[in-house]
Every structure is written in C-alpha cells, then in structure tokens.
Length: 125
Image 1 (tube, rainbow, N blue to C red):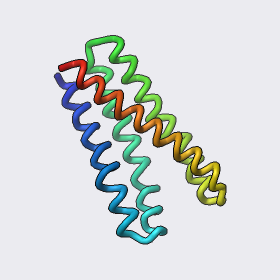
Image 2 (image 1 turned 45 degrees about the horizontal axis):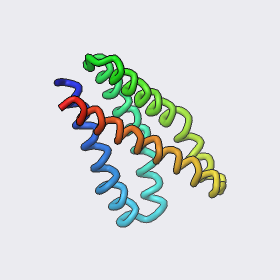
Image 3 (image 1 turned 90 degrees about the vertical axis):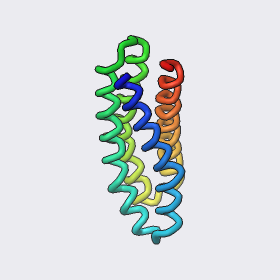
C-alpha cells in the first residue's frame, strides 16, 4: 500500500514537470535563465526521485517489482552522477550533436522510469 502512494507521488511529480513546468520555464524565461533553472532543478529531481524509489524497494513485497524499482533507482543514480554532467559539458562546449544524443538518452531513461512506475501501479491494483 505504501509503495503505491510513493509511486503515485512520483508519477505526479514526473508528469507535472514534463507537462507544466518545463514548457512554462522555456516559454517564459530567457534562455540563460531557463538553462540556469534547469541545471539547478535536475540534480534535486533525480536525487529526490531516486531516494523515494529506494524507499519503495523496502516497502514493496514482490521480488520482481523490487528488481524493477532497483533498476529505476540505479538509472536515477546514473543520470544524476554521470549523465547530467556529460549533458552540461556538451552544451557548454558547443557539442550540439553530443548534447542532443545525451539529452535524448536522459529523456528515454526518464520515460522508461515513468512507464515502469505506472506499470507497477496498474499491476498492483
């Protein structure tokens, strides 16, 4: 039961950021401000969601669900400590192709995590 509450919260955060916050930030703020905001936001986003995912591992009963949650937690860690730095470096050094590839990878990872959380919510109901 606790796992479902935590998963629901994470799905809400992920969807709200994707659908409301990100488009608004890039539409309303100048590029230099929006970039600064996003660079400051994402480490907190990945750390918080990674931590909550770790908590879910301990509140989940099913071992296969725990494995999927562990994979998602590992991906949050990878994105926080490795991929985000590479994305920022590529952007700062004008490596546009590299930036788009790395950013695309982070989007795919985030989408996988979101779909995984929704899947876990659906199969547990």
